[in-house]
Length: 201
Image (tube, rainbow, N blue to C red; front, side, top):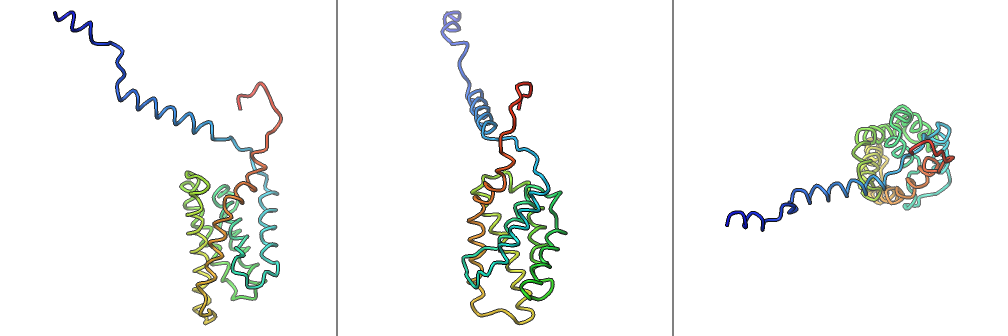
């Protein structure tokens, strides 16, 4: 009787633990397929995009609230993706240039961009862990911190208007441009090179 019962039990019954392991392995394989090995970025492209963003900020936009800080957005991007090449020193130097152009208190933009760069470099690993759309939340926080630091300097010297809170919309538009900036600035690194059958990648 015992032998019959033992024979009736299937020997290859799938356990719930094995099913969970298969699901996690499948998810990892799908994530690996979505990942793409990026090519090395060239230094002229990095500094060229930063210079182009600086020139965009120099255009006579007037007091349009929907115009973001292009240079701040470019600094955040390269601080996140290339923190060893673009650091706080570059952010401080660009901030001084913006102070000279705007005729603002010397050091206002330099302080804001330095804080922005420090936050982006500190959280660059965490930011890159999320998807591009989820990264917009972190970028919005960084841009708001930089803009509030600049407003605090103006408040200290008595140069803030009553409608100062309306200018915070520039950070919102800057965060909304993050997916487009990511796609554009990573395009040269995603460009397919010459195919080599002897290489696995």
